[in-house]
Length: 390
Image 1 (cartoon, rainbow, N blue to C red):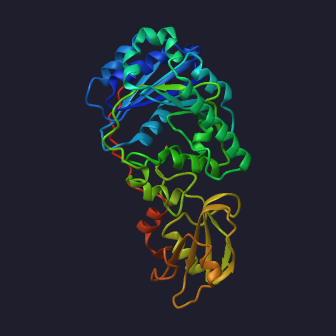
Image 2 (image 1 turned 90 degrees about the vertical axis):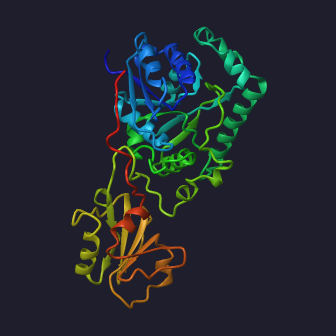
């Protein structure tokens, strides 16, 4: 097969019954012969691998299977590993408990464009209806008729609200729904993929949506033209009763959010960050000593969008806002930093780590671990992931 035109990336964990039906629905896609499917498993200890191998033997497209040890909930890791293993320029992310109508992937394919991410959503089937959906019904396409008027009205309302939010230029809405998402690989790389610091249930899709907007990538709802169908299953034990009670809530609302996250497709360190100096230091030697502990020197870009912009004090200059993080570097003890400068900074480095406002990130000049953590660095998951091809 020549290079596929679209890669469908399916994530799963210990739901082989659902996964088999998801894969059968993908085999029935109108553009099946132009696709590849990558199934990424979050460490299942059941027959999931056998289901994928059995399906792959008769699938109308190439099928890859990846897995890694199960270490809590690692949805972002699954999505990133699927993207890395895939080969098409267009990517569609699909949860393994969803089934899709014949034109679903083709509709994503038609509407994906540079700077445009396509986002659909699902009809949620109850337990009784889900049990009635067998492989023959999926192949016939008749399962798409089970949606009630109420289900369709709900999706129509979501679509209309999204249109209204765009009209209002809402800063955070419509929200990203990562379980049924299409985009160009180049746009995914602008964000460095999904942030793998999300290692419990919830928050990863909102974070991805926030970073899409920061990268000037448009989220386009397409549930008016296509939708998926969610097969019922009990709620995951790791799911909190409310999102605000989840383990990821504090990280989701962190003070500094890098558009190009540190723990994504590529595992970045402080020395990989794009840093811009936006002022002139009164003591350039002291500034160089302070920054060389953390970042590359002197290869620091002087213009354009950066991960971090540095304002030295004492010195002259001001923050420009052309970066995700604003870092104030105070190189001398005993100085008084004007409030107007302090208020603009996300993070303050100083000789004793005692300069800054309440609630502000305040660190010593040499605190590499503290600065890395403030910018989103976390230890990566086990790099010795087991990977198998089906």
